[in-house]
Length: 82
Image (cartoon, rainbow, N blue to C red; front, side, top):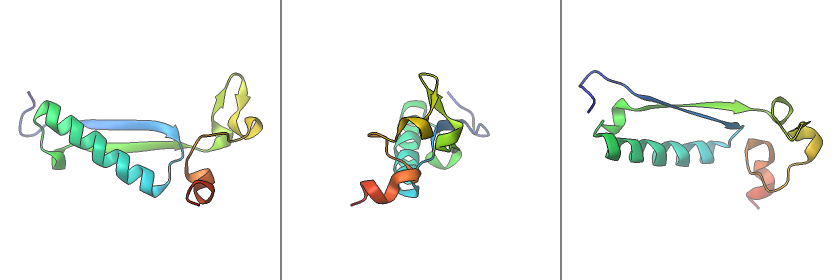
């Protein structure tokens, strides 16, 4: 179990996320981590590493060259909020 001075960190690496997505993910990840480890939620840190579509690729192609598809994030937030 964690001691009183331990401050665990969670890092989420993904395409850029909208603010509402980051808030929901932070709430859920920290809640689960706290429940499973006994570390108080205010001692758990979560960091987001967001990548723009031209900074990420799959199957040898940048996301900007593949089209967005069903992926939701900051880059198409207006589209999926309709």
